[in-house]
Every structure is written in C-alpha cells, then in structure tokens.
Image 1: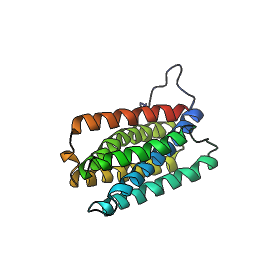
Image 2: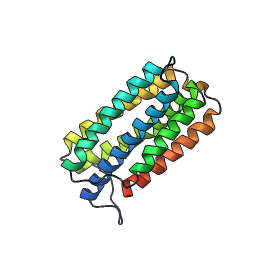
Image 3: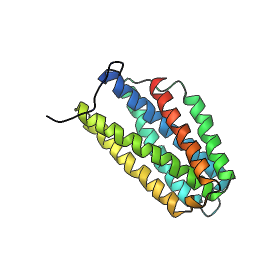
Image 4: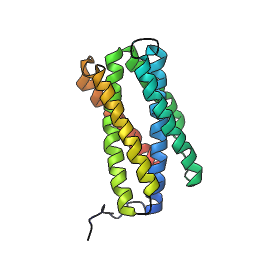
Length: 184
C-alpha cells in the first residue's frame, strides 16, 4: 500500500483541492511577474538587468500557462489578484531600491517558499492520480524557480543589508499570500 497525503475532516474534496492549486499557482506567477517588473523598473539598465529580464521572461511564461489553464479547468482566479498586482510590484521596486543584493535576496526568499509549495503540490497531485500534465508543469516550473534562486545567490543575494530580517519578512508574506489565494 502506497502512503499518500492524509486528508482530514475539513480538508477540501479533491476537485476543490485541484482548483485551489491552479488558483494559487496563477496568483503566485502573477505576483512573481510583478516583482520582476518592479525590480526592472529600478535596476533594468544596470549590471543585473539581463539577469532580471531572464527571470521575468520565465515568470511571464509561467503565468501564461496558468492563464490558459484557469478557463480550461473552470477555475476562477483569486479575487485578490488586484492586491497581488500592486503588492508584487511594490515589493520589487522596494527591494530594488534597497540595492541589487536586496533585489536578489527577495528572489531567494520567494523561490525558497515556492520550492516547498510546488514540491508539496507535486506530491499531492501524484497521490490523487490522473494529473500527469499538471504534475509535469509544476515540476518544470519548480526547476526554473530553483534556477532563479541559484542565479540570485550567484549575484549577491547573501550580501543584502539586513538579510535575515528581509528574508523572514518576504517568506512570511509569501506564505500568507499562498494561504489567502488558495481560499479566496
């Protein structure tokens, strides 16, 4: 007998769990796209501009995939999308305004949360069965998000001023955004 995720009273039924996964992933890619837009607005012409542009292009492709998946799967987007649109851009501009290393630290913090999130989703999707396409998408995007983390580390993320506090705040905000977007 293969051990799968345990479902407890109060957990959403599988159809709702799938809808939540698609909804939150769409919201997350929207937020990521906006973070990079904010960072590029400040740092796009500097030495990190090409790195940011590369990561932004991948995030746009991720969001596009979920843009197409929402109606195909009859999943509504989060009602919080306008908030993530503004908050993502503000986070990007703010961290870029703090300097290149802070912008890179933002990427590391977000991508570490997303790594855990996508890994958990892939595990649950495999246990549900019949979701090979979504598992493949989540795993491919997870690999690209880890590439972003590694690029950010290679480009000075660990030199960010106040790194422990900055990282903890961004990770906490990301986890709250995930929780809210799944449900609303």
